[in-house]
Length: 472
Ligand SMILES: *Cc1c(COP(=O)(O)O)cnc(C)c1O
Image 1 (spheres, rainbow, N blue to C red):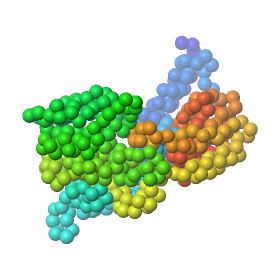
Image 2 (image 1 turned 45 degrees about the horizontal axis):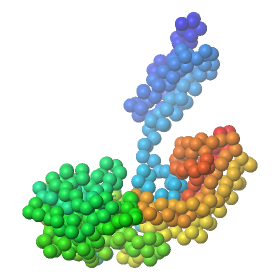
Image 3 (image 1 turned 90 degrees about the horizontal axis):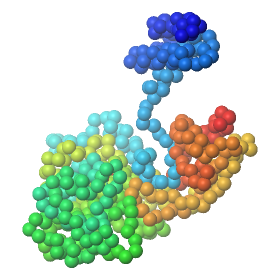
């Protein structure tokens, strides 16, 4: 090593020296020791590496204690920043699994804040003055809204399916159509959940066609349950036949077997009334006579992550008595958010306006066009002639394995930045604060206004202004 470098290494201050220097201006006072010490070591290490690796050693300014303190503070701020952060969703995918699925409405948040920051009657019967059931907060309203006799809620729909199979069919065969053996991402596969529950999978039919006789022929001594799974994230089109739920229910009744349906993205609203394609509703499943139906709380329902189980008193009673419920039980924050979300469904109009998922799915195209035009003119204002903003007629998606075939017409922005690739724009947006998540199509950065919230236009405008100012 040359002498010059050795001399520089000798000049590196130690941890104590930096702390002493910072103590003067109380510069590190808000940084916990466990964060501070590694941050200081990192800063010194970085400087040491710069000396060793670079041809031209860092200038003496880098050695100043002031500059080291700044580096340490920046590093400490980075390491103390929360990892779970809000993001701006400009993908146009409404129930975006990677971006947190459904957003809760402000009315729901208010109740959630109160219940989680104060004591509550979570498991206390205020009328009787003794222990109560946590499920009673949502049982009544779930039955009222759906027409079910009884209700139960757990942590998510995967848990609901597991619990139902374990209760109703452990050690017995469960008959499912081959076309419904779905994987819904995140390693939830019907056959695997079935195996964990101790039920034995009995596939019938073929991928594209299953007939009533396929179920009839498969029923035997060992059969415990007939299961229908809503193939919510894909669709089999062409030469297909599936057994309808009412037909499956009548087969179940003839053989005295319970019928369960995993609706996945269960909805209480018939979207076909609002110009979207038909998605089977929870009410329809129950009216068809299904014994148990399960669905997610945070897909089309637009509430918190939860698994809802509805059905007849006898089956739900058995499900509640299963010791697994304790392991899968819903948390009080979820329960509060779920109850407040369900309350909004008492008035469908209110639900469509106040539940963000429903509002975004049914957002009129004219509103989206208005937002697109506004964002375009804001971007052009900060553009300095370097942005090309096009309005494109593309489509949004429901997402979350919901309404798989649905393309929601939307008006998107396609942005190109002079001298910069779409990939670089996407990266800048993803790394800005808060991160803005969009997509790339035909070498343009695409933003769909459907999934933007009130304050997001300001955030996007600022991110573009910063990017242009940075000279990217
Ligand atoms: C989404 C989905 C599940 C799992 O629901 P989670 O709430 O994510 O646990 C199960 N079955 C089907 C058909 C689904 O679409």
